[in-house]
Every structure is written in C-alpha cells, then in structure tokens.
Length: 120
Length: 120
DNA sequence: ACCACTGCGTTCAACGGTTGAACACAACCT
DNA sequence: AGGTTGTGTTCAACCGTTGAACGCAGTGGT
Image 1: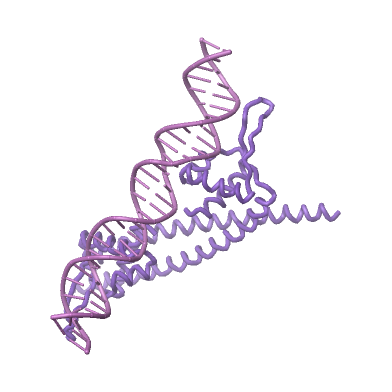
Image 2 (image 1 turned 90 degrees about the horizontal axis):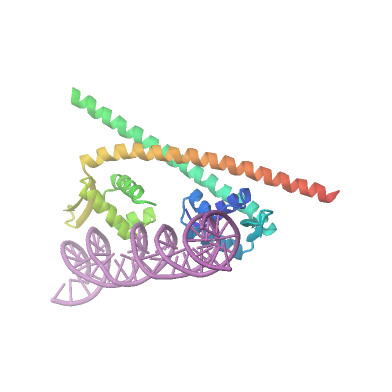
C-alpha cells in the first residue's frame, strides 16, 4: 500500500472517527505506526488535518484529528481521483481474469486431448 | 509485485517465448534484472524450468528457457490459484468502488445543500 | 504530595527487500 | 589475436518500512 493510498484512507477514517489514535489507524489499515505518523504529518503540513488536544467536561485530555475546510475540499477531489484509478484497475483486472480463463481453457483442452490419444 | 506473481508471469512468458532473455523478462514485467534472475533460479531449483544452451544450424549459440513436464503441470495449478486470487481481488475492488461512489454522492449532496442554503 | 502506571504522539536505528552496475564467460567479427 | 556484443550472475549500496523505545501528560492509588 503506497503513501497516497494511506493518506486517503487516513482522511476517510478521521472523518468518521476524529478521536481515532495513530495506533488504531495503523491496525485498521494494516500498516506500521511509523508510516501512519509520517502520512499524518504530511497531511498536517499541507493543512488538511489538524491534531487538536482538548479537555472535556470530565477534565480528561483528549486528542482528535480534525479535517480542515481545505482538507474536506481536498478529500472530495481525492475521492474522485481515487475512484478513477480504482475503476481503471478494475478494468485491468477484468481483462486479466478473462485472459487467464481463456488460457486455462486451452490448457485443459490440450490435457483432455492427450488423455484421448493415450487411451486409444 | 511479489515474487509469486513474478514467478507465475515468468512461466507464462517463457511458455510463449522460450528464447526470451532475463533482461527482456525484466523489462516486460517491470521488475529488476536481479529479481528475474532470482525467481528464475527458484524455478530451476524446483525443476519447473531448465535453461538450455544449444547451437542452431547457423552454429550460433542460443539460450532458451524450457518448461519441464513438472513445470507445465505446476503452471496449470498455479493458473487456477492465481485466477482465484484475482477474482477475489476483483470482488474486493468492486465493493470498494461501490463504497467510494456512495461516499462521493453523499459529499456532493451535502455540497449542493450548502449552496442552496447560502443562496437564500 | 508523591510515584507508578497508562496511553498518547514521536523518533530513528535496524532490518530486509530491491536494484542495476559491474563482472565472467562465450561467441562473434574483422 | 583482440575487440565487441550479448548472455547469465553477483552483491554492495540503496531506501522504504518497521516497531521498540522514548518523552510527555493525565490517572489512580497510597
């Protein structure tokens, strides 16, 4: 999974659960803590995400990752771009599956021909 | 691209063009020469492929990678396995595209609602 | 008031997969 | 012969990735 992928998925998860931790993100995405931290810093640097620390009524410290307006906007266009690349990948995969199926068909035909020949 | 993937694709290319070189394989698969060499050696070790050197009528030396009977057999089952994993991936991708589409729809609806609100 | 403990983000040395320049060898060419 | 070309082979260097270890802040027990 490349960094773009990770960044995009991080943004989506943050939007759904702003109080998610880096360790949870790492576990959810199946990547290392270091990578999540790296991508998150990149997002913060671009101003798409802000780490805020605050107290609740309980007086307990909380962390939350918030999408900035710029982040929301970036997410929309990123989703579109992401979707396009996925559709492309989908088509590529469809073609490959077709190819593999055809190949398999040929192989099994050859095999059955050999069987017939050997049985006569 | 992982080693299994590379090995499988190498076998397919070899079957089509036994006289292909490692450099051509590397270029075709978009991986390094070293990796091709490594995978090819693994295939040779397993007895699926044999590098043969021979002279033609022209007396020029040629190289060719030939699939052994064991290699042909292994290829068939590998194709099936490969196909299964690709179909799985395909389904996964289909779901993700659906999700992304839905998400995008929600986002744009929210955006248009904001537009309406601001224009009144 | 203190101290141990927990849970957070942050760091970075170590790891491991990947690369492709350099090599050894064989055959060809002049 | 000696230089050139086209192979497979090697492996030191590179670089992205990892997660243990760290510093810090709040919590809870004494």
